Structure formats: structure tokens, C-alpha cells
Amino acid sequence: MLENTAISPQGRPVLQGETLIEARNLPRHVGIIMDGNGRWAAQRGMPRPEGHRAGSRSVRRIVRLARRIGIEALTLYAFSFQNWHRPDDEVSALMALLHDYLLSERREILDNDIRLAAVGNIDKLPEWVRFALDELCKTSASGDRMTLTLALSYGGQEEIVAAARRLAAEVAAGRMRPEDIDLGALSANIPSMRVGEPDLIIRTGGETRLSNFLLFGSAYAELYFCDRLWPDFTEKDLFAAIDSYQRRQRRFGLVLDDG
Ligand code: FPP
Image: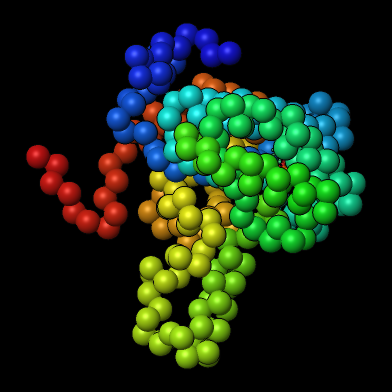
């Protein structure tokens, strides 16, 4: 449960400790690169999968809070395309955790009108994970309070390559002309853009890079990096990230009148 949090009549937290959250200027779509699970485990002399297990507890906390404060779309980088190259036991542990999450959070997702979606090369996931994922995506399809997208077997470059390939096939089949390929056509073929561009991308764990996450959509995203390892990332940290976002002026390449 949240501590020191005042909830406005609209049901949105406005105060966390000393941090005031303005309900009117919330990021609509937040993406999170959940880094630092391995280091969290190493610091405790535990095997890496224990770090991921602790990380999945953070996922529960942050999904719940994002839904409560009125974030419309939350995209979590849960497994990158490149993560398949990790040791087999770590990959298996991550798949098992994902499966556990889909089963244990089913009720919470449905009861809270959350729509679950997935982006990435889902066909590469083991069938038992895919089955649970497809089922919950379908069952939660009418959820209209927040879209929770899990980026799984996901790579931003791979997603752009696949879109280019689809459009090239349309041109080759004579259904499109090369000059019809514009930003709209490209983004319509980028699955992570179904929920729109991310307004805020948070990366935990101290690194300051995007690591192939939401590359197309992040063109004008605000980036927020923090040292906290993902398993230690709390409600307070999410509030700090949103607070930082709300203090920024977004210009989208334009010159804004400060007066
Ligand atoms: C990066 O930490 C994190 C991952 C590769 C996986 C993220 C997975 C979870 C948070 C848990 C399962 C997900 C869900 C949705 C239930 P790292 O291992 O690269 O950390 P390190 O940089 O400290 O080694």
C-alpha cells in the first residue's frame, strides 16, 4: 500500500511525501527499462533468477500504481530479443516467472479493467507461455483503464525492419507506391506504436541508454535514468520520475513562447 499519499476526489494521488503530482500533466504512455535484477541478486549472493523474481514483485507494485494514478499506457521491457543469448537456466527462469505472473495477476488485471498486450517476436516464446499470454490478452481486450504492454522477445530495430519488410511487400505487390511510405504508414506497421508514442521512458539500474527499446516511438520521449536497481524501484521512485517529467518543457522541435 502507498504511504503518505493523498488521493484526490478523482481517485488520483496528488501527494507522495513532499512530491506533488499534478493529475493534469501526467505522461500518457510510460515505458520502463527494468534493469538491475542481476546486480541486485549478486549483491545478496543470490543466483540471478532470484533478482528477476524480486523484479517481478516490482512489476506488480508499479502496474498497480500506474493504473491508480491514471497512466493510460504502460510498456515494460520484460525480455529483449537479445536476452535469448543469456544462459539457458536464466532464460528458463524468466519464462517461468512470466508464466507465473500471467496466472497470478489474471484477476487483478481483469478486475481493474487493464488491457494486456504484447509486442515482440512472440512466436519464439515457449508454447505454454504463449498460451497463457494469448488467453489473457484476449480475455482482457475490453479493459479500458490502462493498456499494459509486455515487450517480450522484443527489439526496436527488429520491429522497424519487420515494418519495412511489410511495406516493401505491399509495394512489390503493387498495392502501394514508394511515395506512399511516410511516417503514418511506417508507424501503422510498428506494433509498439499501437498505444502511441511513449511520453516518458524510465530506465533503472544506472545505465543511460535505450538498449533497443521503443526506438521508433521514442523520438521525442522524455528520458529518465535512475540508479535504483529494478527490484528496489518503489512507488516513490515512480512519483519522482513523473515529477521530473512534469517539470520539463516539451518542445517537439519547435520554439515555444516562454512568455
Ligand atoms: C534486466 O536486468 C532485466 C531483465 C532482462 C528482465 C526483466 C524481467 C523482470 C523484471 C521479471 C519478469 C517480468 C514480468 C513481466 C513478470 P539484468 O538481469 O540485465 O540486470 P543486471 O544489469 O544487473 O545484470
